Image 1 (cartoon, rainbow, N blue to C red):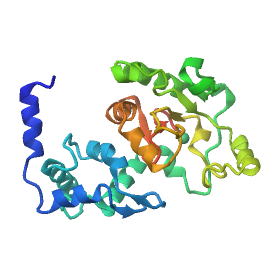
Image 2 (image 1 turned 90 degrees about the vertical axis):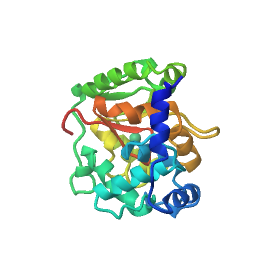
Image 3 (image 1 turned 180 degrees about the horizontal axis):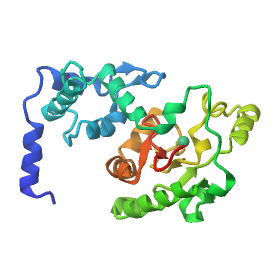
Image 4 (image 1 turned 60 degrees about the vertical axis):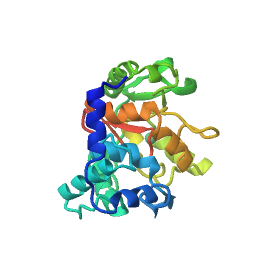
Length: 263
Ligand SMILES: [Zn+2]
């Protein structure tokens, strides 16, 4: 039960005045916006709604004036026209902020790629912490941080009820092995696996945040990502992971990086 007073406050905020036309524009674009926020054509922005709502600090549904008003305030604070209308330009500003919070991105794309950590700084996750029995290695400090996060997440009944919740399906990846997979299997994860993956740091981990029927836990299909970001695991991470030092690569709801020590 939501206490009546809180409910009233939320409802009131969601009915607050919004820039003219923004409500209708957002409701319409939600399923129709044609854009390529990560270089690949996408339709609509449902997959990003939880992240955007968290960024603009609203709990209001997209199709409310309160959402448009919160978006307009965010745009105004970020030197954008405060239209309250979600668009590619606004998302690009958000994406720049989110990517900027990933230490790995600051070195990504440059000529140097960080060396992998020495072997003695890596630790192996327990079987129950990994997905489908995989052997997962991470920097020992990152694994400790993950365990604190997992323990907290399990206080959420929906997360605790699903044994796969936040289990790790990829951690440290040896650069030489990644390069070999790129060559022999053609599995290059775009250009990333062949050049400089965040997983070589031992600080990045891919965790199970659900999947749509018929898809794997790391499928970038939009239907899969939409199902993931609507689920309890991702939403918990959105609200809480930063407290444990974790940041997300927004295109991949499952990919989280620990920022607690230098790369
Ligand atoms: Zn990953």
